[in-house]
Length: 90
Image 1 (cartoon, rainbow, N blue to C red):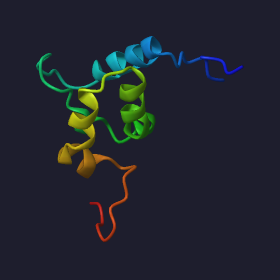
Image 2: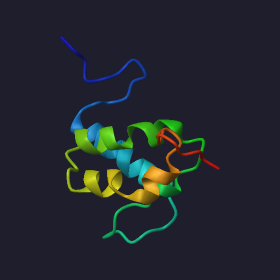
Image 3: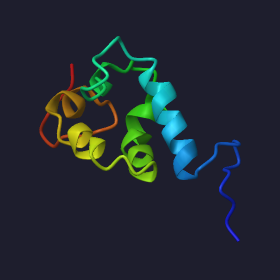
């Protein structure tokens, strides 16, 4: 039986993923509550969030926010975990 809690103690149920997304969004600069969070403004040292924010949005059933994030070219360009063939960052 799989546990809903990881080895680090994070709750992987939808409510846990939603709380993680909400807490992470609070780290971003102030933004309109009705607009998508400006995830492309994450700091460079937020590696976990750069890599797993789409996963947590999906697990939290925030399916309206997921394409807003993954199709936002500001996110794609700023995300240090995405490798674009033929493109050098910096």
